[in-house]
Amino acid sequence: AIKPVEFAVKPVEFAVKPVEFAVKPVEFAVKPVEFAVKPVEFAVKPVEFAAIIKQVNSACNLISI
Image (cartoon, rainbow, N blue to C red; front, side, top):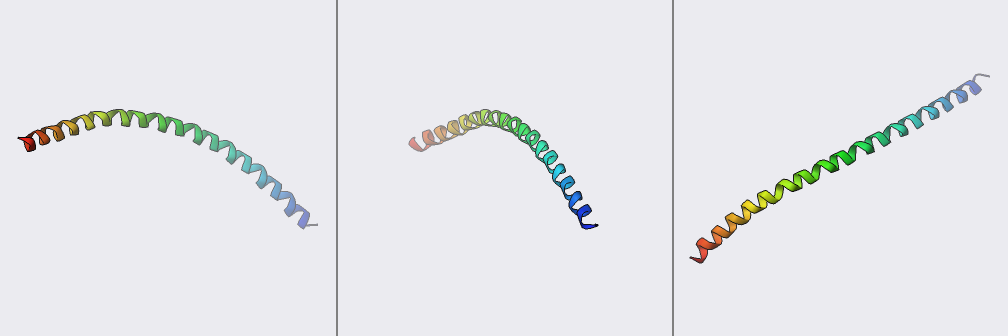
């Protein structure tokens, strides 16, 4: 008569897991915010590339002279 009680406890464990799965969509909802931040980083890089291109152009001008 003790074993049926043990089997009766396990459904409670399975009932807790859907709560964990319910939390994960919140994590996935946070990630788009991270992806939304990255374009800002990429928006900064063209300025860096513009500075590098200027340095390369000036270096090429010195070499050509």
